[in-house]
Image 1: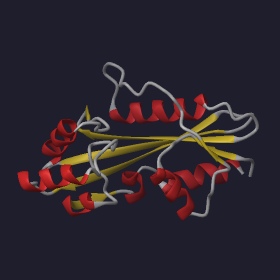
Image 2: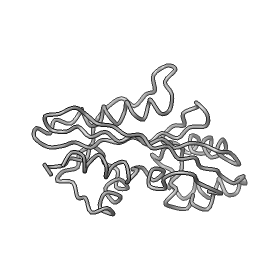
Image 3: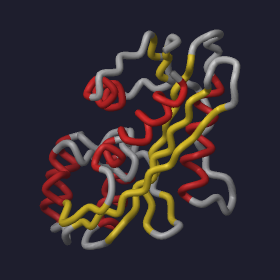
Image 4: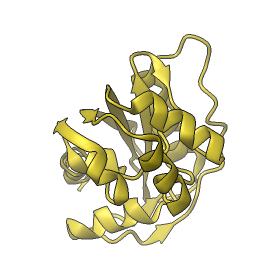
Length: 185
C-alpha cells in the first residue's frame, strides 16, 4: 500500500489503527471549522468533517485517512466538551437515555476519489447521580471528547448497553476503516 497519513491528532485513533496492525507513515492534524451547518444531521456532519479532514491534508502520493465522531440525542448534536459546564450539560442530557455515536471515515486515495464509510452505534447510559457526574468531571477525562465522555475510560461504567461497534464509540470504527484501506491497496 502507498504511504498513509492519518489526518488526526487523536491518540485514540492512532492506538486503534495499531490494534489492527496499521501504523501510519505520518500523523498530522487537519485544521478545519467543525461548526455544524444549519439543519445538518449528526450523520451528515460526521461525514462532511471526515471528508474535509482527509482532503485538507496535502499528502501528494500518499493516502490520507480522516475521521470524525459525533454524539447525538435525536438530531441534537452534542459538543466536543471544552469546559466543565459543557461536559456537565452533556452528561446530564445523556443520563438514563439512549444516544447515537456516528463516526465517519474518509480515505482520500492518491490519484483517486475520496471513499467514505459511516458507522452508527446506539449507546444506553444508566441514570447518573449528581455525585457520579461531579466525579467524572473531576477526572478531566471528558476534555475534548464528543458528548463529554470517553467510553474507554471511567465512563465505561455508565454504559448499560451498546448496539454496534465499540471502536466506533472510541473514535474509529475498525471494520469500516480496514475495509477502506484494503480497497485502496
